[in-house]
Image (tube, rainbow, N blue to C red; front, side, top):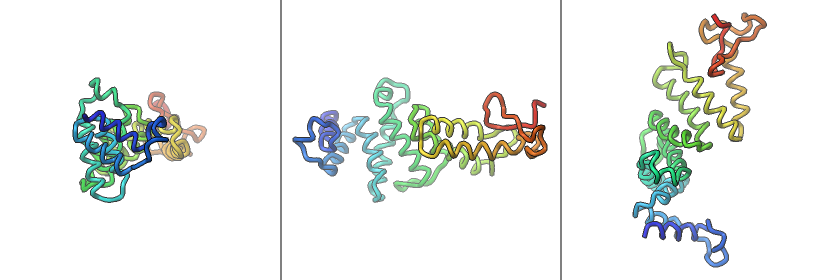
Length: 219
């Protein structure tokens, strides 16, 4: 059955140390068995096949990756089956988010769909998706609104929220990137666009709620 094929594929991929002395690693066979398991409806195999195929260079593999990752992400979020395999499904969602961002597997680039799948992964506490989502949020805002200075709306708080989560999770370079962003945004009042050099003490005050935008004062 599909579950047994999945377990066997993991043995050939050397994911069980107990079998390493008895079974020689065979990535091609392991991937083939995982693909059969995925075709049989095993959600873990679909998610992992999606992620593994999309890491390969050939367009045909990336196309297969999109296919299996889409199947895996089709399980209703919050259902028992999806919660049992949260990391696998999040990995598939991350792979799909990157596929739509970069146009892998014959997909048309779509920041909207990239954002959708990256949010799916990030909201499942999948740390690798945090900084990718942050970047897509900013790019999506520029694409839709022509920039980040939009009356009544700012993508900056959400952008910084995910980048700060990335830094907290220990993602390489995230902490340094957060500092660069904060140093940049803290130099201009969000409301009146005045430079920080004209503010009292030459320092703007950050919003007490989101701590992601800066103002001359409470007024």
